[in-house]
Image (cartoon, rainbow, N blue to C red; front, side, top):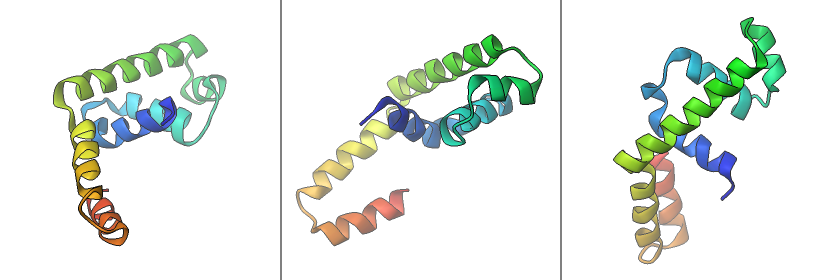
Length: 98
């Protein structure tokens, strides 16, 4: 899994622990695919301020996962279930957990 996908997964779990500004910057950069310059311009701040905010968000998301392990626990459960369920049942479980 690439870093971008991993961060988006962590964001899904821990977004409520971020500030509104952090959430907006993360979404603009990682989901809306805006450049740092575009985000900076729309927020009337410097490009380096957006870069710093995104670095802080990544640090926070990784810290939350390191301590709470919500994402890794889900992955472990799905891995165990994949050994005992048929693909259709596993997909249903994944949809429920999403």
